[in-house]
Image (cartoon, rainbow, N blue to C red; front, side, top):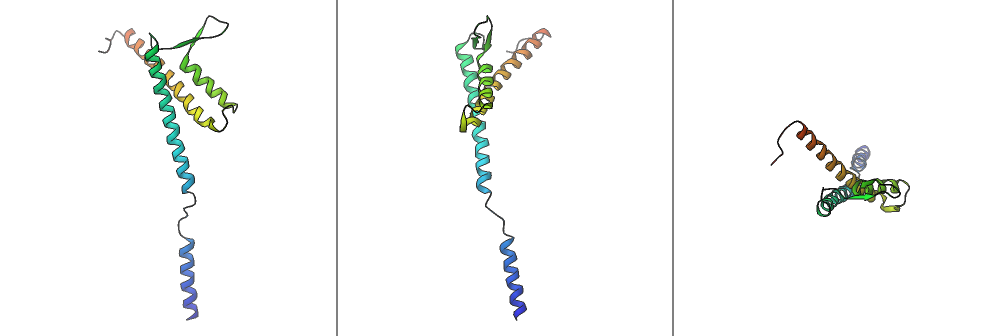
Length: 132
C-alpha cells in the first residue's frame, strides 16, 4: 500500500512539473505588440511623407537647401538619416526605437520614389511606351 501511495504521489508530482510554463507569455505578447506598433509607425511615416511629396511639390520631391552650399537634399532622406543618426546617440531616450521605425519609413519613401524614377527612365530609354 505504501509503495502504491508513493507511486501515485510521484505521478502527480511529475504531472505538475511537466505542465507548460506560461511565465513567458507576457514577454512574447509584448514583443509581438512592439513589432506590430513599429510596423505601423514605419508605414504611417512612409505614407505621410509620400502624401507630402505629392501634395506640396511639382516634381514629386520636396527638397531642402543644404546650408552654406548651393545644393539641396530630399526632405524624406534628410529626415530619415537625421533621425537614425540622432537615435544612434540616444537623443530620443526611451522612444528611440519608435523614432528608428519612423526614420525607416522616411528612408523607405525615398527609396520607393528613387527606384520608381530609375525604372521609369530605363523604360523610356528602352523605347517602351509610357504606361496609361
